[in-house]
Image: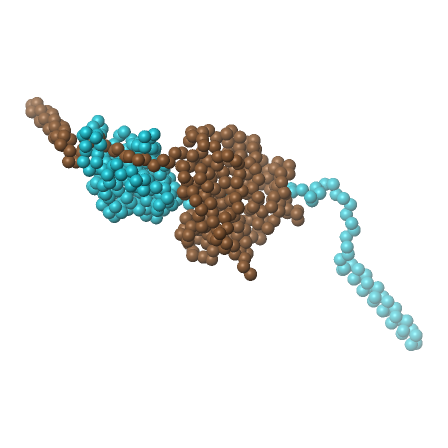
Length: 269
Length: 221
């Protein structure tokens, strides 16, 4: 039975969150409000999510909810499934913080799901590039993320993430156990890295069951200009090689120094 | 006489059975009587343990994250020469801004960070300055293929090995664009001036370019 998802033409469905990308200057201040997303990363299941005792949503696997504006402080998140299993945790939120709160399996797929928080890096990114963060939230061993078979990001373990900046575009990505050539536990799939944005990928599922999948979340970022220079004027000729006047100036300078030093010597008793 | 024996035997059997039944009744576990609701212990429907804090995700191998250089060193030149690095940008007229002090180099913010998987990490500096003297970049003319250039910030270090050194006419814009590309293989590009100085034009004829390839990944200092 064909289980592994090896559809090379499939572009991962993106949960594009928030709207128009503001072209802010690099000096833009973060909003004082926090920005919290809830990510349901437990494949093949549905969970009722509550925050501070109030139900927020019934979330299927791969759903990204929010952003929510939680006041700074401690909050309680709870997930309940249809069989009465409950997962609960407290989350500390600071003013102005952007956070993903992710429900996911531990490394051992028989273990109870847990919540882990992931802070979003919303610093500006240069034009023509995107910030890519891959997070390991799967029942799987430490992994390498590869592009066209070459390791892009190495050795990410459960509840860890790695960030890099790459030119925008579509990357054929797969995931293998770290420092190995395989077996491929996810992919290859086409991953689009958006411009002027943070593209977050949460690897989810159970490697042993070949049910690995990914949640893709795109958050807009301020951009810095990246227009290539057209000239690099890097000198004023005072050390010019082959120029008529500059070596003369050097000789004068050296000569002047010698005169001063010599003059001092002569004055010594 | 037989009847007496029978009766005694029957009696003994009955007594025996009685003893057995009593013994059995004493040894057999019986279902406990249903408990009356005990108000002193809570109903087992709510979680009694307080919620624990959610774990915060860690960065895997933080020493490998691409970084903005704050220092550059030429390892194999006569002294181990080092320059501080400032962030610089492209000015409105297309000129690459450079630190006025030729002892310092500029890292172009539109280029790649050290250790990024693609594109050029661009460092440029003044060759010379009438007021401030000879630049760190003057050492670039000594860099040979195979020699090391090391780029650092406070926590991390990235090593490059020189692959090429050449002069390029300073008016060759298209060639410059290729050097500044963020899409090619990861590399380090060092730029200063070179060639001859044209007094009338007020400019050097060429840019001196040194290219270097990354060695491995960034690591902790």
